[in-house]
Length: 341
Ligand code: KG4
Ligand code: ZN
Image (cartoon, rainbow, N blue to C red; front, side, top):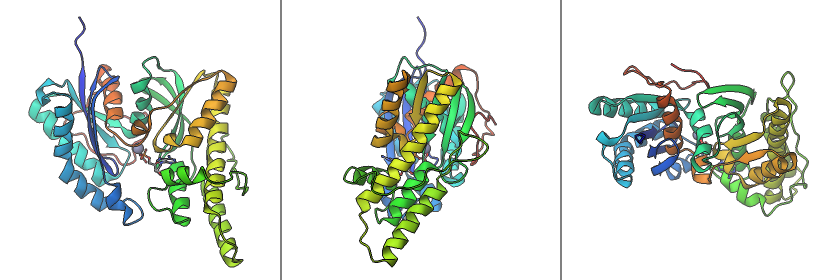
C-alpha cells in the first residue's frame, strides 16, 4: 500500500499568519488562519512593520493549532512547505525562518513555495479531477496574471498587468468611495445594490500583448468621476460607482481569459487569488465558459484569499518532484512564477 504523505505548510507573505496540514496533496487535514485585517484597517492598508511583528507573535500558535487539528505531531509530517516569495520581505522572513528552524530540528525536508503557484494550487483542493494542463487567471491584491499551467511544477505567464493589480484597483476605488480596507469584499457587496450600466468606465486595451491588463486608467477614471461630481455638487450614488467599476474589471478579466483559452486551444479555465472570490467575476467566467464548452474551476472563498492549505498543496507536488530547498533558503520578495532559487 502506498504511504500517505503529509505536508505541514506555513504562509506569512502579507497580512495572514497561516498554517495547514495537507494529506496526499489534495486533502485538507487542518487550515488555520490568523487574519490581521482588523489591525491594518486602522491605517487603510497593510503596514509591513506591523505585519511582521504580528506574524512573529502568532506563528507558533497557528502551527501548533494546525498540528493539533490534524491530530498530528511534527514528527508525523513528511515535509515542511513555506511561502518564500513574492510578498513583503519582513513578513516572508518570519515564515521562512520558522520553517527552517522546525524542519532542521525535526530533520524534515524543506520546500519553499511560490505564493502565486500556491494560489493556483488552491484549485486542486476541491476538484479532485482537476489536472494540468489548464489556464489559470490569478487575480490577487498584488498580481493579475494569465498563467498556462503545463504541469504541476511548470508554468508560463501569457499575460499580466502592466500597472495595478485587480485587487489593488478594488482596494483603491473602495477607499475613494469611503468603504475602507480591504475594499474588494465591500465593493462586491455594495455593487449588488447598484446599476452596472449607470456609468461607462473604460476597458483598457494594452498594445503589444492582447493578454496583458491595465487597471490604472480605470482607477483614474473612477477618481475623475468622483471629483467631477464633487465640483458640480452632484450627489454620488456609491452603489452605482461600485457596480460600474466592478463590471469594467470583470468584463476585461473575462474577455482576456476566454480569448486566451480559445486561441490556445485549452479546454479548462481556473481562477485563483483573493479577487477570485468576487461573486460577479465567478458568475461571469462561469457563464462564458458554459457558453464555450470550457470546464471552469474556482476555489471556495476561504481558499481564494491567503491561506496555508494552498501552500501545502503546491508544496506536495514540489516535494514529489524532489524540488526541496537547503537550509540557506531565503525570502525572495519579487519571486517570479516558475522561478526556483
Ligand atoms: O490573494 P489575496 O488574499 O492576497 C494577495 O496575495 O494579494 O488577495 C487580496 C485581495 C485584496 O485586494 C482584496 O480586496 C481582494 O483580494 N478581494 C476581493 C474580494 N475578496 C478579496 N476583491 C473583489 N471581490 C471580493 N469578493
Ligand atoms: Zn495571496
